[in-house]
Length: 83
Image 1 (tube, rainbow, N blue to C red):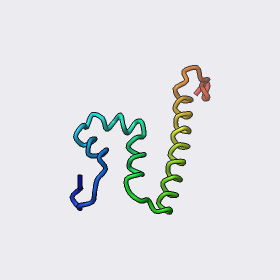
Image 2: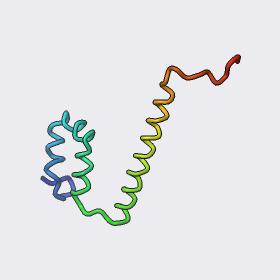
Image 3: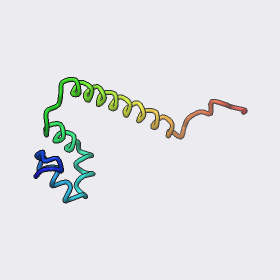
Image 4: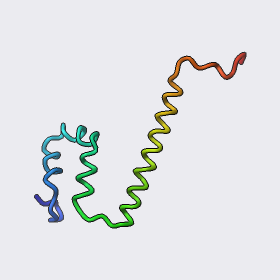
């Protein structure tokens, strides 16, 4: 299967285009990212940028999760008593 530029396309992505209901499941599992990285050559500088971005995104996601879980707690004391 070739795309509009004539380059070969991964069969995995061709299957995902025909069955759109599978894409959210594959994206959630991280399968799309794994296959996308293996489809073509990735320059070392782009690989380092991608890895740094993934680490930052993971740290941001965990910190945001901690913040949300803290804000959702219902048994917090009111910091502004009497206001």
